[in-house]
Image (cartoon, rainbow, N blue to C red; front, top):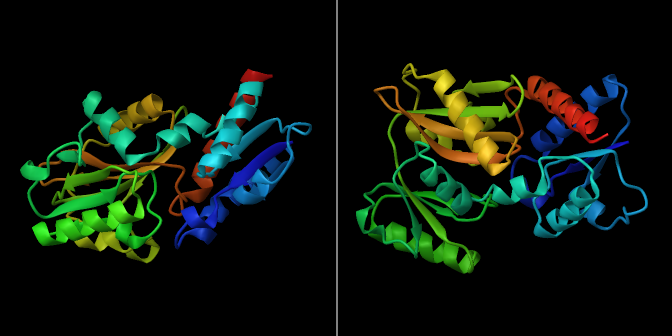
Length: 280
């Protein structure tokens, strides 16, 4: 039996139905391939005693620290998981920012506040909570002057006292959303659909100019980040400037894949079965 653990609603603001839909799509593909699958919500799974009834494999969108600790213990026993606990833990803005800096991944000019000075950041800029995931619209905001900057930093520091704040320059250009499953042939990119926006931030960059860019280069960069971070099932955003250069502005674990759900689900199911065969 394969276990699918869905994402808690607190980590799925305005996306609950879409996040559930990709989990059900993966389950459907696994069923077609002859595998029994049980879906369970993250918090319900936390309340289960699983030591005597371990699944053959797990696919999950979970994010809570308590659930990830439990997942780690199950991985140590030898149950293959997708994404793995370490990958999900690495889907953290501060970790990803440092990783991409270290390995020369193209990103906007970014500082980690308060450990780095914001003196060299010019407005407008994005001020984001340093944790892995936005739980509300005000976790990621575009600020245009020092007053707005101070207000947003204060808000985030009050909401997340132990988190570093990520401050990134705002880049003009085409916003491109991308989705991938590392280790497979699946990669999909598109311009944002305003009707599918989580918080409506995509409209800030306006209508795309459809500037040509190196799509194979983007795939190579994304797969490199996926490999380094262990975020195998991933999604994110980049900005393509008028010269066709791209910069990664977000890299996340397991998005909803609403624009390419069936193709993504097929790739995820296939990769999970490869993991299962390898561990058998």
